[in-house]
Length: 465
Image (cartoon, rainbow, N blue to C red):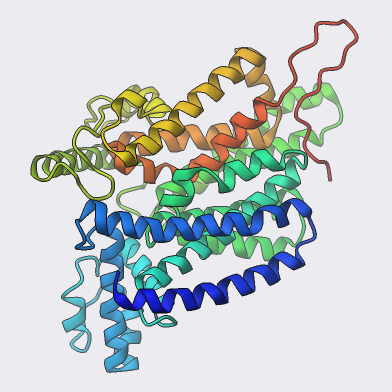
């Protein structure tokens, strides 16, 4: 961050909040109005706070780490625009090829040929063109971009279960690691925003069946961006929503016997459709194609483990949240599917319920440990209140809850196997947090079974259309 941030950022904050209060005034639902400004404010605090943490905590005022690397790459593109619009445009839209006109800029970019990371640079550059490349202001624009998708997710969840505004507000807006790590100049910020819009578009187009063309277009754009930035998210999202569609269709069969007989078939078709969809979406990715994903997990896990050891051995405090003693082990990954399957239960547990309080090594890690402890308490309470078998009966009777559990477990396996340390894991896992926490909070609201013979047990009933 530079001195210009102190002058430019406050001006843009005034403009942003002026627009935000106008939008709030147009919202019809009282609950969405109630949370709109506080949720936006937390995202902005998260964006600025993350930059300060990287600059003053992880790099002692130097300003290192991925977030500042994106910004510096964007600065080079910004300089190219200053020399010539055509050179800047050629660099901004490049697909990794070197050109005589852009070489002096491209040669300084270590991520120039990486499509996923350079996409973030493109977004940062576009935002920077409006604010003289001020880091804090660009970070705030990223936060707003993410907030738009998260708010779309929140309004969609309210359509499914209108009575649980508080639970969904907590899940979408008030998880500390979610609004902190999902708000700055990072890949995670873009993915969180696009995942929210993808969920909104899917539900409107395929469940409500409203504005189908528009919904499909927004869904396509959202999934396309996610595919560029973090392809593996699609491997979890697409099968889960495909299964949701088939479960919704099975509910429309009125004859109980036919419905019971056809449900496994429809669920099977949903699983196959999800698998085929994921295969096609990741076919062009060498790392995340179905055939190579086990090897990718092994290579990534080994790389991050070595990076953690190197960081711990040098300064004791690494970038991206890595620090001494923050690594974990889920078992040896040798690139085979069998090693992934055997390590999957540990990966799920690590992602959802660790680090423990006694594993904390720094203040940043404490935040994640407190959240994990909360998830443990909620999970224990959920099973104690509903019973193990009844909990899963409730989950698998509702397409949304089924989506939440399937997406959370698949995503947990993916990031748990490949992260290697808690500092990286806390960022990688944020896309699953709203869905997993929504699942826990909703199931903690289910009434206890009443053993009276004729008593009706109130369970989670979604809104019907």
